[in-house]
Each structure stands twice: as structure tokens, then as C-alpha cells.
Image (cartoon, rainbow, N blue to C red; front, side):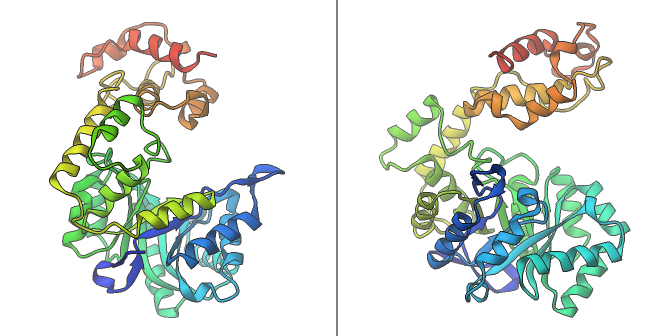
Length: 378
């Protein structure tokens, strides 16, 4: 296992951090963790050299912290650092923040949390946390020894990220990043900004929820033609670890074979490891994925609101993602939400208001018809 210094904190961490959000369900139902298996996987990772474990209050119907707490008994807690998170929607004042933190400490069976994160914030979420006094609360909890580091995880624009990063004295940040997201959310600019500030960065969604773990045929052809053969998973993690600003890459595993494969990969990767030819390969891979785009919607939302409630950018986003990553739309969470809320393209009456507002001059009405036909085909 390769270890990295976490920026200004000066502490060492395993480059591979185990994400505790994707454990398989037990036979009694997918929302119930198979505790025995999950505990075995967590300890297998730690025995293999993993020192960073990531969970959250809401993961797996609020049971992930409980199972992690059980796994860290018998001397395992002393070997690792724990990251968990405070959801903004569950807190509204100091008393509720303190109650939630104490609940998490009980679940994790520990007297302190190493990395405590304001969960999944953008600028609006950060303003909420500021309004309820979270920055001062986190500082007070650091002094009390209940947490060690004040952190946040992020989903939003680069502009939001830069604002939040400069608005508080942060110890660590967690961002979504992978070779397809170089210009999305915080992106490469956000990663490099945190690096210049010497703030350690933990990476989530390095495989885009598993979508980068299996390549479509045109992408796989590029991997197959390269002189050195690696799996799509290894290429994705190798690309991430090439960045010197990256401290930890999170990976959720639900099988022992996945743990072992990650341990192998993260024993071979380090900053600056990729050759110019390998970096060019990943640029070509990104282009090959993007060539599968169905429609050039940028998500600007000038077409919204639709007078009939159609979620135009949402539908196009799902359509593009299903095509890019060759996934089954039946299992797409965003599509399911669109259908359940009645925001599907079946509500479109062809009024044309969206096309008149679209700065890309897209054929939205025809695109919606094609997208909905493909996405809802039985």
C-alpha cells in the first residue's frame, strides 16, 4: 500500500480509502447490510494496509456507521482514521448538531471522529451551515477532542467551491473527481486550487459510481491497443493517483476480490507515475466516451421551467449518461425520480417554448421524443 502525506496536516494516509456506502444487502433485503460480510471486508482492507475509512450519517439507511463501529472493535479502531459527515438537512441549531454528533460517536463506538465533514454542500448548503453556527461548533468540538479535523464534501460548481474554500479555515476537502469530470463540479481547477492552499483532497466517485469500471466497446478498443494492459479500474485509479494534490482515493467495495484488486492497484501507484503516452491514452479515452453523446445539452436550464413540467435537462442528462457508459436505464436512479414525479417527456405537447429559449439551438422536441422512447423501452 502506498501512503501519502495529507497536505498541511502532515499526517500519513493510505492512498486507498475504503468507502462504506456500497456494502451488499443481506438476504432479508437490500436496505439491510450483511453485517458479517461487511465487517469481514472492512477488516480485510485494514489488514491489507488501508488506514482511511469513509462513511456518513445517512449511508445505507443510517446503518453504515453502526456496522463500521462494530468492525473497528478488537483493536482495529487504533489502526485507522474515520471520516463521517453531518447532513445539513438534519440540523438547524447548535443543540441539534451536538445531538447528531453524539449519536454518530455512539454508533461508531469511539470517543472521537478524525475527519468530520459538512456533507455534500454547495454554496447554498454552506450558507445554511454558516447560519446555524456550524464553523464555530466544529472548532469547539475540535477543542473538546470530539473531532480532529473540520472538513466538507462538495457537489456544486467550481465557483461555489472556490468561494467555500476561501471562506473558512478548512483542514480537508472531499470532491468528486475522475478522468471524465475534469471540467465538472470542482474539477481540475478546484483540485489544483486546494493543492496551492495545501489543503488535502480526498476523492470520491473515482469510478463514477462504477460506470468507469467497465468500458463500452469503442473505449475498450483503445485500452486493448495500448502496449501495457490494465483493467479500466486500474487505469482510472492510476490517473487519479498521478495527481500530486490527491491525498486519498475512496473506493466502495462489496466483494473480497474488489478489496484485493484495489490493494494490488494502490501498491503500484504514486504521483507523477504516468508517462506522456499514458496521459494521452486517457485523453483519447475521454474523447471516445464523449463521442457517444446523444445530444449537446449543457444543462444551462434556459429551457426551464417547462410549462408542462418536463424535466428537459434531466432527461437529456440521463440519455447521455446511459449512452456514454453503456448502462441499463432501468437501474438509473435519476430516471426513476423523473418518472415518479411525472416530469417525463410523455408530458411534452410540442409547444416549442424550450427551443426558442435554447442558446444551443437544439432540436429539443425531437430529442425528447427519441430520448424517452429509448429510455423507457421495455
